[in-house]
Amino acid sequence: MKGYLILLISLLIAGCAGQQVTTGEQDTPNAVKAYNSLGMQYLRRSDTANAKLAFQRSIEIDSDSAQAYNGLAMVFQLEQDAPLAESYFKKAIKVEPDSAMLHNNYGAFLFSRKRYPEACKELGRATEDPFYNQRSQAFENLGRCYRLIDRLDAAEHAFKRSLTLNPKRPLAILQLSDVMLQKGDLEEAVGLFDQYSAMVDAKQVQHSAQSLWLGVQISRLKNSGIDAATYGLILKNLFPDSEEYQQYKESTP
Image (tube, rainbow, N blue to C red; front, side):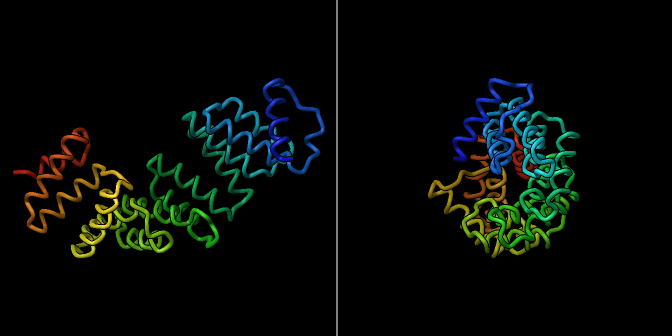
């Protein structure tokens, strides 16, 4: 029934764009969910015009549809209209202040705007719900945020919580390795980097500029000049314009 309703609404939007829908689907309890689902489908195809129309129709039926406000926020984020995106994220959170998903999305938006202290606050809220199905991701995001404001202890805690929930998150493993290196715990940094390297070898993940530069630093501390040079060469070949390669060049005699 829900799939039929989405199809019906899709046809109505396609044929009546810009007009008020007067058919009886507004009276259907699933109409709001159907409009929101349709809006997300359009959003995934980057069809922001029809996505906006679907989310607006949802709000016409239910002015407290947090999902529709969140959808519009993501639409305007995609359209690079940051003020409008932020206003709709705030509207969504006002309707559902305890939604981990909404706090995570708003936190990710703030992170993308380099508003890290505010982002950390929102991402922290996202980690509070023990039933949030993306909680491991939220802790990982929070750890990355804390790193950028030099709160290494908080970052360490967040990454470890992420890995407790999901031990196979390569980015959390890599980031935690980097944090432990910065904190002077070479043994733990090496162990984590070895885990990440094993995932690279198993083709579960690919090296990044960060991982290669971390490999250089760890190899140097282990007095393994050959490994350091190998990581440096790969870094040069794959990421010659990266900040990490610039750091490597500056650190090389």
